[in-house]
Image 1 (cartoon, rainbow, N blue to C red):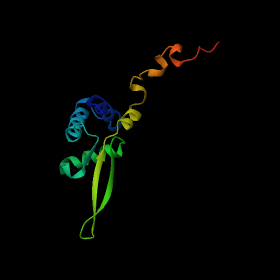
Image 2 (cartoon, rainbow, N blue to C red):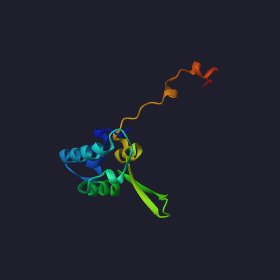
Image 3 (tube, one colour):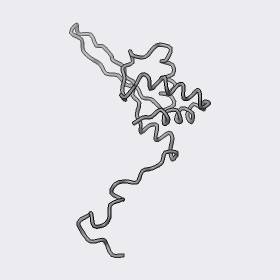
Image 4 (tube, one colour):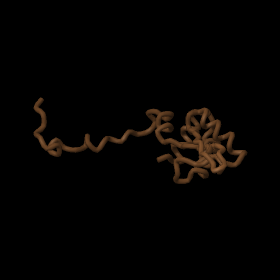
Amino acid sequence: MTTFEKLSRAIVKRLDLPREEAEARAERVLDYFGFRTVIIDNAIQPEDRKLFYDLQDAGLLRSYWEAVLLLSGRTWRIFYWELVAADLDRVLGSEEPVEEGVYRTLPDEAWGHPPAST
């Protein structure tokens, strides 16, 4: 899941902005996405579109489109923006704490066979 903190830190790192400005931009972006990861381009205000393109160039947002055939026979393109948490994690690198996997925390008895001898 993308959090405000994660997005603002990634903006600081990639766009080399002061923390306050990065937080303002992260808030604007997350206001569009809410709890979703994909939004339609038509939802974006024209003055915010440049911010979205800047974040795309920085590797923090993705865009794609799909073509829909209308009843009239014309093709209509629908453009989308996607916020991918893995992209932010990649940008932040080792800044994020790594959670220990659940399987590593299980005792040897949980695997249904005796532990390997050393």
